[in-house]
Image 1 (cartoon, rainbow, N blue to C red):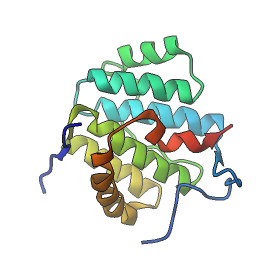
Image 2: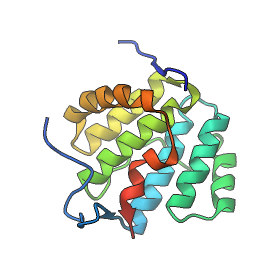
Image 3: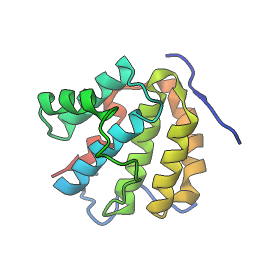
Image 4: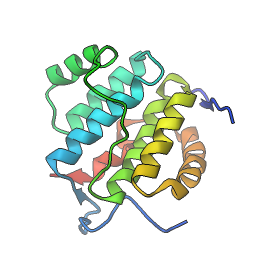
Length: 164
């Protein structure tokens, strides 16, 4: 795997697991949060105005993991760059743990093309801020840099721990 660069110009012991945690380390996520998670990852991949092949593959896997039909996922990707009805507003999840999982998965997805673009990082920062976890973003970036040497796989996604 190639090393990921972050384009730039210029802790609490919070984990992804909050009140919905069970003994098998899963968190219950509502349909609304699942939909918001997927939609927001779609917004993230359009930040650099191009959806790369690896991002497409990952979004198909993510869509399947979240229970969405392949046709829905393909159609959403085909329309996301030109869809003016979807704003770039950062999501607010029902739990901060879900937001932290989103940040982690967002970093992995952003790096799929070999570079985390400034617009992607700025948007992820706004997601962290809107969800009250902006202080954790630098720590998550450090963890991500350590993690990236292990490679990206669908098994590495935080959303693997969700159930509904």
